[in-house]
Length: 607
Ligand SMILES: Cc1cc2nc3c(=O)[nH]c(=O)nc-3n(C[C@H](O)[C@H](O)[C@H](O)COP(=O)(O)OP(=O)(O)OC[C@H]3O[C@@H](n4cnc5c(N)ncnc54)[C@H](O)[C@@H]3O)c2cc1C
Image (cartoon, rainbow, N blue to C red; front, side, top):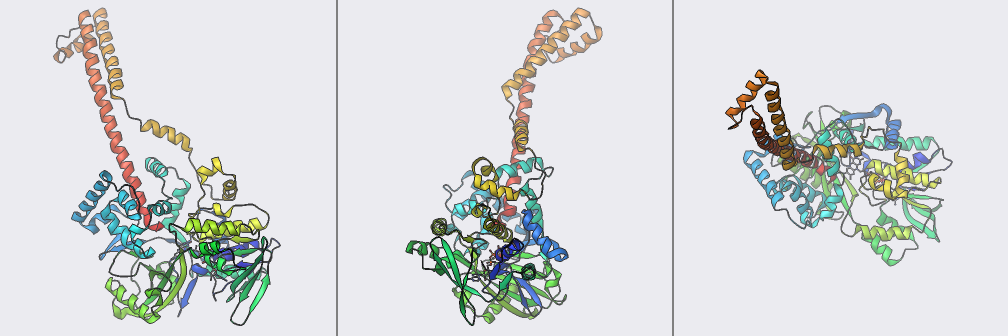
């Protein structure tokens, strides 16, 4: 039995078909796709937030292509930040940022950055400290503060620095440094992911099209998908989940199963266990928090509104956090090319003022804000629709690790329940990692022994640690072996070369070496000129008398030449080493700047 027909649940059903297992999916909603659904309104189609399809997991990518075939469009990504009426490319472009901010503001940004280098906030406790130390306080205020606070609903000073470090774990100083040094000639897996992020795949009619097709394929091949079927109880005894109570508008029934794959939020799973688990487990379940989300889609009577896929709104005077132009994701998202459908994304908590506001007022609010931002004129807005999505984001607060650990400790006693997906695992998973967790759970049901929790929240595998340390993670790496073959350089060799290239020159040694060589050469050449009575060599060496006081082409002059050659050689050697080290220093700074630019490029993606 599979609970939920989102990407994880449907992937599980799809993968189990043909293996002798009969999957039955129960979905409480009347549509499939979960958070990755496509909403339809009067012929217009829109996502719950724009859903890009990009992954480095080959099995996932293969399934997407297998299902979508020619309807999987490859789209270029275009996104900007809107800040105080000005647009900034995101990922950022330096000249665009300078022009947008103005020269004065740019200078202040640089000064603030320099200040953060000299006087960093220490210890780094909050998200604000973490970002400010890396980009300067001013840049933090401009490009990170407002949007982050809208998404999470709390001040950046209340978000822990650990969270930032964890969210931005994709950034590795080592990797970025190497990338900066060796440029594009070599590509790591991470580079490839970033390249893919510059473009992405998207189903012709939105992400829901993928999941509607998977549902049809599951049904055609003998599986069952039941909509409007809410799993309201899970009965257990001993070390097994025995059955589920499934309710629809008419009735409730008890349905038995051998294995249960759950994609429902962990908090709800704990609440639905019958008999209830011990009080501390229930308390831990209640302690898991979520951030909710609503989209107001406005239909605009204009063919071209803006050229981006989405725009981050860094403006504290409006509540909207992000704007999506669904037509730019796929032209088939609108029924009439002369119109545009803009999705305004609002982050909220279920039950708060925004969540409780009626649809008409929300459409009014969105219309006012869109006009205020200078995107459209009021009279161009024809119509609108609202979609509320509870539990869009599992919250990573200070306590969630402990709560999740307590819940998992209790659930570990059952050998036939498998937690997968985003809310199903309380992980900030994208579709691909939600799907991969489902695929691994299916393999476990068929006899494998993967640790599904080893997929980290970014869906990457801790390869460096796993290789050395963990057998369990090796299993995950084995599944991962089917991923695209990317030319990976021999990093040990690169390390060795880097160490040599970036090695500082010792000024005294260089002075000594060049001094000795020059002194010896002058000594020997003078002696040769004297012994062979070579007039050409004698007259050429004699010119040195202009610079070396007392030097002559004689035996005693050879000794003086040895001294002069050594002294000047040493000076030249010392200066060469000095200039070399200076260039090296400047080069390292250039590399570091590149590293920092790369962090700014990606940071918003992780918020
Ligand atoms: C704003 C936003 C933007 C995103 N952008 C991207 C993106 O660009 N690319 C990307 O890959 N991912 C993106 N994601 C993440 C993506 O939406 C999720 O990873 C994915 O939908 C998770 O799939 P899932 O099956 O685990 O969970 P869900 O999508 O949450 O599906 C779970 C399903 O279970 C059902 N269910 C719950 N409880 C019960 C019950 N008791 N009985 C029966 N059914 C139940 C729900 O109704 C739901 O249909 C985004 C998410 C958000 C919020």
